[in-house]
Length: 360
Image (cartoon, rainbow, N blue to C red; front, side, top):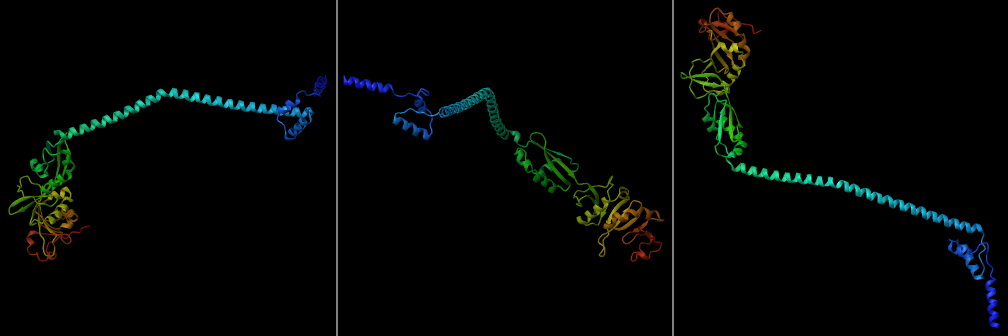
């Protein structure tokens, strides 16, 4: 009986525990809330004492508000993360779609590049085959040589002087053409210039520029052509239809002949037509003296260096002469007839009937 009474008392005491009607289950809620340090200490103390939490509503509301704000913040953060993830997925989808769309173009570009490379390789291979075939064929060897521009030199002579060889390598000889051109000029007196060029697939053409014949040398009653470079050809010639001046007493002096020809080429055509012969009348005192035999019967004594300058006065002096004679242009300009030439050979300045001419 006593035990049963005790149990009833204990049960009554348990039932009679004060309950916070205003804030039911507030301790559990508070425990679940995020509390400050002092709230946690107070809560522990109340639990030990067996009392309920009697905090103000504002504190609980603040804690609940903070929880709500935390929840909102977490929700906003979650929203942001979800939006970012959505953006990333959209970007991935877009990139995938772009890649899928570009895939046919990429294939086309690859095919084009492959075709180009293949074409290049095939063309190089074919070119190499063509080159090898060409150099093994007769087309790579010299088959013919033609000559152009030669008037006084025989064609066969030019070919032999060039030392070009038929059936030898075409391009080897063409690359050395300067040497073959020199061979022609060195071995031919008439050849002024030689030019070798391709003529067709495997032929050469040699173009020749010849020296012009400017005068004729008289030696031992024979006549030899004199070229514009002063060289005398060994071939004898005739005077039939000759319009070139005849040179005498030059004794194969190519240097002197070259000077005379150079001065003669500077004369006007009218002055050239008046000259028949040119004689070298040098002396110990004057090595430039020339005697010109004119077509009108007169003779002119003149220096080589003054031929172009003083011969311009010949027509004026000849028109003042009463008869044929000598016009001395060696020192100054004056004239005298042939009949007084022997009497005045030692001193031409004291000749009778002399006709000094003013150069101006």
